[in-house]
Image (cartoon, rainbow, N blue to C red; front, side):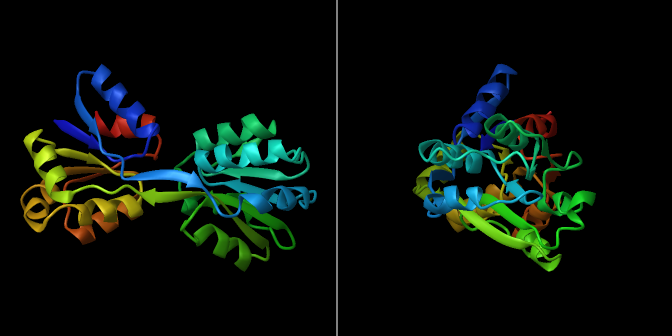
Amino acid sequence: MTILVTRPSPAGDELVTRLRSMGKAAWALPLIEFTPGHDLARLPRLVADLHAGDLVFALSQHAVSYAQPVLDETNVRWPASVDYYAIGRKTALALHTVSARPVVWPEERSTSEILIQLPALKSVAGKQALILRGNGGRELLATTLAERGATVKIVECYQRCAKIYNGAIEGKRWRDRQVTTLVVTSGEMLQQLYQLFPDVDRDEWLLHCRLIVASARLATLARESGWSDITVADGADNDALLRALQ
């Protein structure tokens, strides 16, 4: 089994290193990279305007890592009187580290579908909900909170930018290295991976690979694109992906 990891750096590089330390053949092909988001300049005011009982959501570690330097520069602190939520354990740890506040996350699975089912989020009418995320994120959380009566404000803390590759060259590279397993953690990257390679590589090789994805939603998208050998990891973090690969 030769594994191709499409996660961006540094998480993708870390996963490849761990796989190789276990004796597995693994390579990195990061499909996206990160840059600062367009909404960072207004973040300090939005944080300062939060009131007791309001809500802050971090939807990735990158959102936290791009948000915190802006708050540091403006001497704005995360308020102690609001409730903090994160999409997963590592994002929760990142938010807790910078805010020094308890952070709740869905322990069952790191998805918006599970997060929004938390009992405390059933009654949010009249509260502000500040969502820290990247560009083009899913709207489920924001839409559901708004339907439940919250005032939702989305902050684009970072942008995901597609990395450009020559599909014909990459197709030959990974076929020559006999890649048989692909790791994909977002719908955006799944679409990029599908579209990257020429038809012949897609039909003869790509769609025959085993695919490791981070959610049932991604598995559905993958089946619709033509993959059949699909494994759903129990999360999007590297620990969960390693469990699925073993």
